[in-house]
Each structure stands twice: as structure tokens, then as C-alpha cells.
Length: 236
Image 1 (cartoon, rainbow, N blue to C red):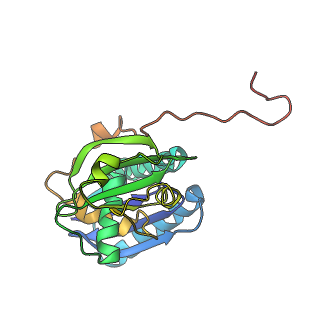
Image 2 (image 1 turned 180 degrees about the vertical axis):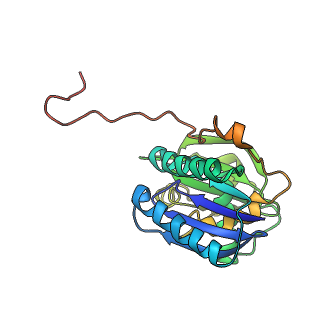
């Protein structure tokens, strides 16, 4: 399959074309949060490359969250527009599972048989979006949750087996989670280049055009607007 992959769940923004699960063209900005202006340019460039190589898109894969409310909405609106325009399906991808795939493929780390992967996406202050995954098959164990991290977080699991923490929410937890079984991997970000293999798994959920109309990203928590500090617009 030829898939356009879109990732906008954090401050990083990336897009890639994969063919049979392998990235053949990609664009990324890993240092800022300008998704609304960057992503359309990335996609235009990638679609231009696709035309040059006669790649016909079969689907769009979208990192569905959890993550930044604004980032997810930008990615979803552009992905849905492309699906409608080309009449192709949408494949939502679990962002935390994608982070695990990025950790495995970009670090080359060797995992012990009983290890658990614990990707973390920053949810402000000491809260993160997280879940547990097995490194062998990237299957999730338990539910995705918004969790406030303290000294006792994951204590029962860490007392029995090694856990690997990564993602933009992990660094702030490193001083709190001090167990010898807690391992931290830096510089792991969700990257569209690694989405294609997940999108082509037999268990991937493909949404047809009718389903795309009702698709919403996985926000996990409702968006809460901050109080305005503009004179005359203060929240009462």
C-alpha cells in the first residue's frame, strides 16, 4: 500500500509517504509548533514526489492521539480533507503505540523479555498521557490514561520488572521515578516515518469515507480554555 502518514500530536510535526510499510519520502520539523503552516507545505511537497514516482495513494494514516488538542485537530482536519478529495480511507494510529515503534526502530535498544514500554506525552505540570506496551508485538496492556506522576507511580510494576520511559513527558518524571527498574530513553518523538508499518498491520482499523465524516481524534481529556488576560475579556 502507498500511504500518506501525518503526525501532529506534540510540538513535532511530520509527514511521510510509505510504500508497503517503508518510508520513501518524509518531511519533519521537530523543534516548533507551527503545524497549521508547516503541514500543508510538507504534504504538498510529498504529493509532488508521489506524482513524480507514479505513487497512487491508497490511504491516509493519522496519529490519532492522545496529545495536543490543537495539534490533533489540525492533523485530523487536513487528513479528512485529503481523504474526501481523493476518495481514500483513513487509518487512525495510536500515538503512544507509534512512540513505542519509534523507540524500537530509532534506538536499536535490546529489550529484556519481561520489559514494559511506557511512552509518555506531556499533559502539563506533572501529568502525562501514558499506557503500557509489550516490546515484542507493541500490544497495549491496560487502558490509556492521563496520570499524575509522583514517587509512588508504577511502584507495583517497577518492583517486579524493568520499565522503559520515553516521549516528551518522560524527562520531567526522571527525578521522581528513582527505582533501579526505571530506565529513561531520550530524544524519542512521534515520527510519521514509522507509521506505515502500523497502518498495514492486520489489526489496523480502516475508516471508509462515510466513517471519516464522523471521525474525531482521541483527545482523552476535554479541551479547557485558559482564563483570558485581555482587558475586557476576563473570565468572571
